Image (tube, rainbow, N blue to C red; front, side, top):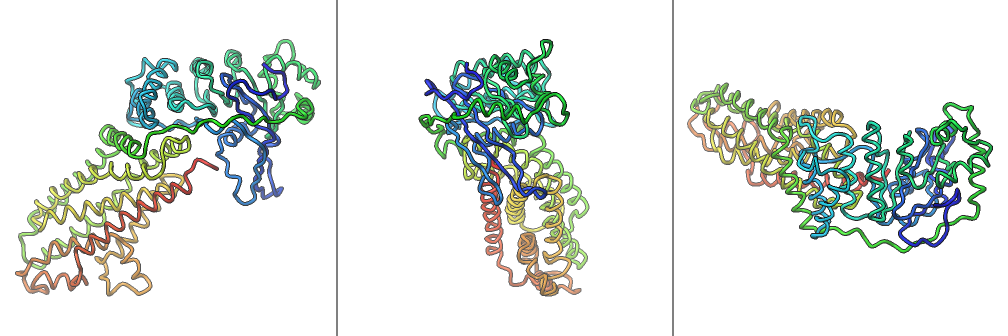
Length: 570
């Protein structure tokens, strides 16, 4: 162990080092705010370094900087300093992002499959034991509706998932947050054991460690207002504080005492500025030695990653009642009510039946598609998992988007089939095959649109409000309330961008194009019905092409937004 100086000897094993890290952001009051101010440190493989300090001291920002998650190119930002040894790191953030319906073992095996190779699978099985997860290997992670792992078990599983790929550096943000003292200590002890056995350099943030938790740390870094007050080991800390005229009282826990010194919300225990200045004097002349670059993170090929994500997605589709079963129940109940209300309407040839059939077709085209907003909360949960896994190098955007689309197809097909069976046959409507196919493609478009919305909004409530407003506008413009020729010129563009319009047009042609024996008040045949609704010249095949184009367009936009804005950087 070293004293308070940053160790500058040539490392004998893997080492992560940072020197002079400074991060500034624009500030309306002072022009610029310093988040990190000349921070330095070094941790060798097998060591656990705890970064401690009060809230707002810059602990998490330091981890973000080490992980390369800070975008220093944004206007007004300044990111300076040197980092070595973080080329192959894994970052476990405070909020768990796990697939809730997978078991502990399935979660680790999925992570291993994304890495590829038998060794990764063996590593996953070994981590079950090393991180104390064997007893809960067959327990699901847990969701809002399904009970699963405890908080401590989830935290250890999140760590195990990242260790499968054998990173050289492991960054943990508040791994004990929200846990009771026993669970918190268990997490730290397991991390310490894995660090020692795997020669991983661990840097973690802690808010208020217990005495037992403190003993698991090889090195500590105390921070205050983005500045390092001390970096070194326990023995060096007491010596340093004495030299800074802030000796540890004999009856005080050293960690608790230093945290009280560095908490400037409650001044009076010590002069933080003088402590920082004293520490910087002790490390004057220290530098960062450039270590050899780590080999790149290993991961399976594109097709393997795509297949793994598809397999995981199908498990989620089957096991999570909220993903498809609740929606299926909604569609089935509403479709059954429509079928009962409009039973046998297709057998009638009078004018009232024409109006009734048009109303049914509009309602299905509009509201059945509108109900796709129900998928938004689940897409946003999946988005959180994607961001975490993408930023740690598990997979890329394209395989994720393609896998999500493939997984969505069976569920959407089931919704379309159930709706068709419960509406078309009881109501005696025409062309069940075209009807079902039209609804299927339209629901795929809606799924893609909702995925795009989920990628663009910070919270699902905002997304639901936004999607509801857009769908409402589309309903208004799709040609039922006002036919295309009667829509004002300044709103006619809404008719063409509303994919509901094409869904409704296909429904109408499928229903009325073959009818030629209506009562003549005012419609004598189906062609007159279509002409009345400005749909006489509609090309059904072309409209199907437009819908497919919308589906592809929304998926591409979804991929672009994920690629550009959901990198995990801030």
